[in-house]
Every structure is written in C-alpha cells, then in structure tokens.
Image 1 (tube, rainbow, N blue to C red):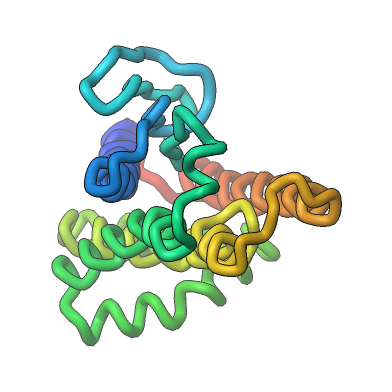
Image 2 (cartoon, one colour; image 1 turned 180 degrees about the vertical axis):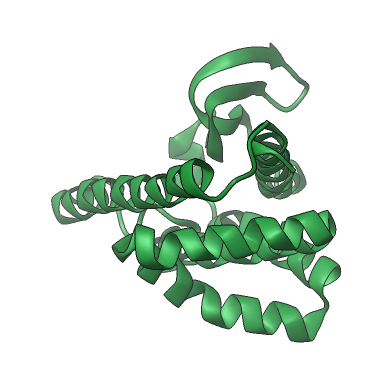
Length: 219
C-alpha cells in the first residue's frame, strides 16, 4: 500500500472505532432516557452535522477521538453513580469487545497488556520506538486489515481506560465517587491532563509522519 492508501485505511479504522465507541454511549443514554445534545465523531470543528432522533451527529476534521455530550448535565449528575459509570465505560467496553472478536482472546490479552507500555514508550521516544511500531502496524494491516483494526481497537481501549479525568477510566472513577466537576483541584488536574494528552498525540503524530517520510512506499 502507498501513503495515500495507508492514510485512508487508518482514517477508516479510526472512524469505525470512534463510531462504535460513541454508539455504545448512545445505547446507554437511550436505555436510561438521558437526553443527548451532540454525538461527535472525531474532534475539531464539525465538517458536517445533522440532526438525528437522539441528538446532533457531527463529524470533526481531526481524525481521532470523539464524545457524546448531554443536553442537561444537571439532570445527568443527579442520576445514580452506577448509571454514570456505565456511560463512562460503555465506549471502552465496545472497543474491547471488537478487539476480542477480531483478534481472539489470547492475542487480545497480549496486545492489551502490552498496550499501555507501547503507548507511553512510543510517545516518549517517537522516532526510536514509535516509528518502528507504526511500521509493524502497517505491515500487519497490509497482511490483514481485520487484525490491524483489532490491534488499533486494543490500543484505543488502553488509552481510554487510563485513570485520568480526560479519559473514560478517570471519568468512571470520578462518577463512582461522585466527585464534583467544579472542584478547583479537579479542574487543574483536568487541564494538566489535557495538555499531556495533546503532547501524547503530538508525539505519535511525529512517529507517524516519520514513518511516512522514511519508510512508507510512495504513491
């Protein structure tokens, strides 16, 4: 595959994972009659948006991540903690299930357990560790796009389960203990983690760009 084909395949995989992640959250909202304001697939200013029976569906221009926002946060915060935790963990549960389905339990376990260290070490050293991983990933997707999607779903699940307030794992902990979102210390931690998440994404962006420049076949 050339650079364009690899980029399109990666974006398609990210779209599938993000759409599944958000769809799981929508199911929880529908089940417990929680009104949704917006379902965002990908971050950034919406390229396209249209109303649905559940809320506005928007497609951002940055092909990573997504979220589901509530119409009435005050009502949501009055819901029992178990419901709020279920909503926080619905997306990771969906991507985890997808990865197990595509890879099988044994391979998923290996990818999931090693996923945390790969994400962190690749971000710390994008050229020496991140780029070789990206190269192996595209070699895998060239042999089997299904296996590549399974690996990416496993890594996405790892990232989203990090116990930080910006990720599903952290939100689940906060919802379980009913921590107020307006707590100044929490707001400070959330801001710090947001910058850390941007730095992590930027490092992996460097690894991806380095792979395309030095290792990916030309169009």
